[in-house]
Amino acid sequence: MSISVPEIRIIARPQAHPNKCDFDVDRSVIDGTAYFGTADSAASSPLPAAIFALGGIASVMIRAQRITVTKADSGDWATLARQVGAAIRAQLQSGLAPIAPGTAAATPKDEMIREKVQRILDEEVNPAIAMHGGTISILDVQAGIVYVKMGGGCHGCASSTATLKQGVEQTVKARVPEVVEILDTTDHASGTNPYYSPA
Image (cartoon, rainbow, N blue to C red; front, side, top):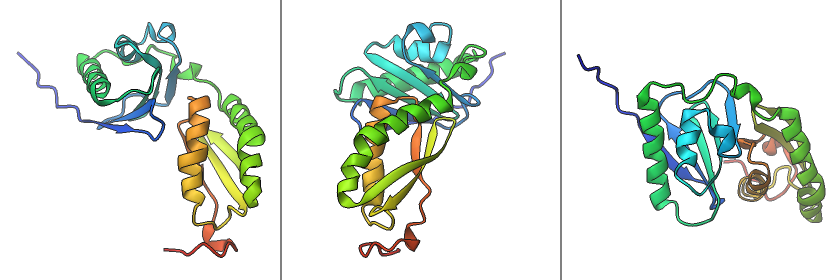
């Protein structure tokens, strides 16, 4: 008797950083977050191992329904994205656990991530935006998500989203691949920046 396996939908979403692409799956892949920075670290986990086997892969991060793949070069994702999608689908349809037991617990701790991101903010980001009177501070890090607050000239600035997502987040994620996302908690509507106008 054959058992029908529901089709798995996967959407590839290339990031602004040319080396990174998110693969959103229509179901949960794992609970928590798991990061694999080398093929050797993924050897006992079928899903990341299958992605590394494609060649040219620098890292794989799996979090809930999203798989973020970083490749070694900045070439076109067109062919590789299809190959990664096929590898993800085949592994999930196999019925095998996508990662080895205990792997998620080995993910870099949030405090370590916080220290790395703080160093980038202190040494690169804040000195640059300070020229425009702005500042960015970390409030918390949870499961690779960095929560920040923007102050000074950034508070209420119409360009704050672009600054954070297209500038700061891409810089940080390129240097600290364990970072899943940077979220702004600032209440920009209460800012005094004259260029801000609420939608």
